[in-house]
Image: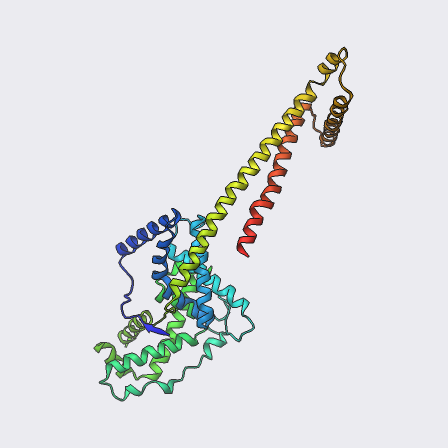
Length: 234
Length: 158
């Protein structure tokens, strides 16, 4: 099951971010002092965004939930054992745990037919030999029906969202994980680079390429005219 | 048309931010918090065991240090005691056990001196006893650490 997150806004204000950071540090200090129940606040804050990231790798709900539970336990132990240094952002540290745990679990479940491409695989970053990216199939016939009835903006919006979700589901993991970390988990380019251990240039390039591909798909499905009409009306 | 392209890009950015988020199952947090509580309990117990293990190691090391110093002191006073005991008659059993200790200390001394001579270092009984004490303490700490602390970590993780 998934939902559309209506209330997420782009780029939160720095002041709010710093406040949230202080609040998180406060929670972490309380956990260190033995108030383990406050960990629930961290769970509530991160569980769905972290679940999305885990799903991008494992693609199976039950396995993703198990993996996420394991990641949360690891994070809890890291806090009480003092492994988490308060100098860095907790979110970056936590998502690194989530990502590495999901990858480890993926390796354990390797017998299943997943299509995981190693994150550190840089082939295709040049845009020439990324087979799985170029051959990615999106059923374009499923979309574009509302292009005929241009007045129904809401239907078009829902359809485009479905298209984007299908795109994210079919996109090779080395792109979808980065897009999720950037757009859903609100990590900066630098933080993604730190979390995944990839060069900053590679992170930026993959975001750019994935967006370009999505743009190409959208403009193939919808005529430029109706798309612009929709965007201006939206 | 570049303006249109920019508008489409902006729309894609927003659409990606509003894209689907997977929701965890309803009992996810409660199940997790139960596990966290158990983990917390284990961590507290480990901390206690850690502390006890450290006390044991500390006591053991202190005792070893104490015994080494005593042996060193006894072996240092060897000459004087010999002079004094010539006129005093000592029970044969005590004399024998004292001989064993002396033999043992002598063996360690000669062994350590041999090593130091081999390395080209001069050795006096005092420096030797200090060196031996440190070596012994270090070895004991390593053994205790491996048995108590690392062994504990392994069992807790499995």
